[in-house]
Length: 116
Image (cartoon, rainbow, N blue to C red; front, side, top):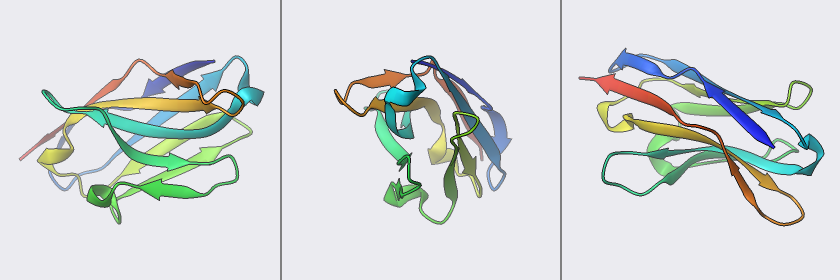
């Protein structure tokens, strides 16, 4: 499975960005997909996840601001980020999980920078 993320950039606080992650390869092996982020000097943490059936989960810090969605026909997961804050600044990584082995696939990461 290969994951290609896009959509990061520089935005002012209060602005919006949408991240996209296109999966290719052994798509049938994928169960859950999601987005993680890693700020400088910090651990990588889950931002939002979505199952193949569409059930979602969010970190408390982004609830009500971020929305994750999934287009199974396009093998793509999106993260709509609204009302961005400087503390949302991080490298965002797309993630997909193998349903049989729980192996995690990772995209290359995309930088999101929110200026105050």
